[in-house]
Length: 261
Image (cartoon, rainbow, N blue to C red):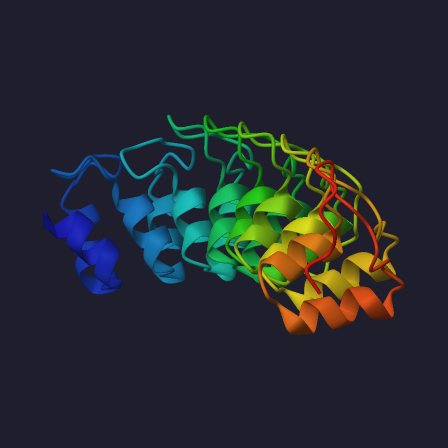
């Protein structure tokens, strides 16, 4: 790594100024294909970012690690994110894998960066090459505060990934309580978000879903209700939640099997 890039990554403004004054190409890439601005932005060095932008660095340059904005967003540097946005960074510019800065910030759970991107007009329901949205990435990684910001920004709760599961269903299966509005949307097996929450014993999410109107007696393709799904997995606390919500104990699946209570 040359002086320009090392100084940018390390936030050494004295060395950075010397390199620029000596005629270093501000948009040159190091051996890893990364520019000085991306290094500085990923590390959150606001002074270095200002210096590089002042020297004419291209704010939307896409390199091996993405853009300066995506680097700052992924690492949660809200001040750097806002600085880059103010310098006309393209908020929805994608890397080769289809990831936007919002997706990276959402997956990592950086609430401040997500809010800054949303305020700048980021498209909240854009998909990457795997079909994932920012909401899906935040949900599956249990980033509750980010989920709330995205929902407030109008993220579609029922958007499905390539496996047919919604963001909420992914979150429930992974046992994350996102406390987001309930939905009767089903995955490819007919399971609702409430069922997915029950399977992982996620009582907090179940309560949130029920409060939002999730149907306690819905059934999947096997005819199993949320109570059946919970009981099979032995989640006593989740079972109590459903019983308190009025779940019927005498339901049967398509094979005539009853709740294993």
